[in-house]
Image (cartoon, rainbow over the protein chains, first blue to last red):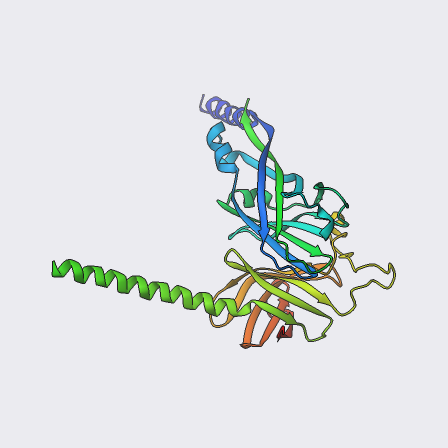
Length: 172
Length: 154
């Protein structure tokens, strides 16, 4: 009798463990203003901004525990310029994310920068490690390293839209 | 009434001491900010602060043009093929350094574009214008140290 109870208990545990499915959602960060004040000099310049992780709001809204999160990647990165100028002044742009506890990660690179456009979609990195750990931080820094073709008195003011693909477990 | 005044004064004094301590620590740590040249003189690296950590990127190359492609050198050895299009000029080779104490910045990494490898790294300041950069794998004993000089921009 005791053996049967143990088997039932074990099977119940197995059933409950397998009773999860993986769901996927996209978290969007709109209109990040990645900024650096001019004068800018020919060559490499840094612009940055701090933003709050979209993860907490999602977990609260969906009543999901942080333990149920499986992975995250940056699926899209779009840059645009706020004013009427276009992106011609830049020769290359790379976007990175970092936080106080997690290391900096390269997430997208654009080289060369298309001419006479105000908006570009940047190819995201194939190898993205620990993006989920980064999203678990409250404060995240987005950094744009831009190469400028010539000296200019302008500021760097890039609007950035980023999409994070998030995988998490839900009960069936 | 006198006690309240005294208490207020004590709080102000305490805040001033704590604030001064933080400022002093920041000032010490921020001595790393600037442009540095490795001993081989082939490049210059600008170290800056993002949040509370220090990062360095290549801002000048002695030979910026790839002799094969006749175009600006790219990070062609990056382990992630999708990132090989990134120009070396502007590449962030030093990442995530925290100021610990005794003129040391640790917990960071250094990237060697010659072979596409990332090493653990610790930085020590010998004088205000010289730092030693030690890249290593696993334990500090297994590594290589280079001296970098501060470049004074006129």
